[in-house]
Image (cartoon, rainbow, N blue to C red; front, side):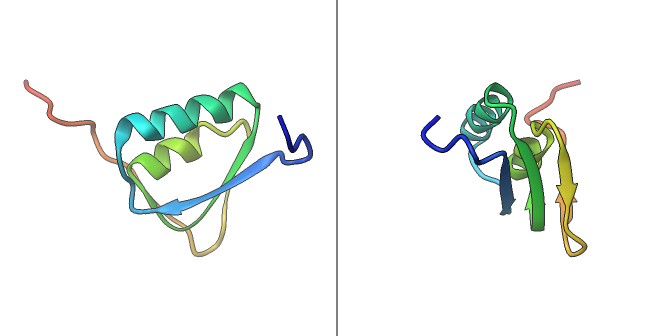
Length: 73
């Protein structure tokens, strides 16, 4: 809200704490921001990336997704 001219968030990283990633993703959706991924963006980073209303990746970007765990069958 303090910087209404910001409309895109750049993300990169190996992931992290899932609930924190979910909270960040909620804010991206709430403020209708776009996302751009660069470098390695995996796990929570990839989930944050997917929250963007518009999504872009740089040529060097690598997205890494995995199933949430633990999963019992």
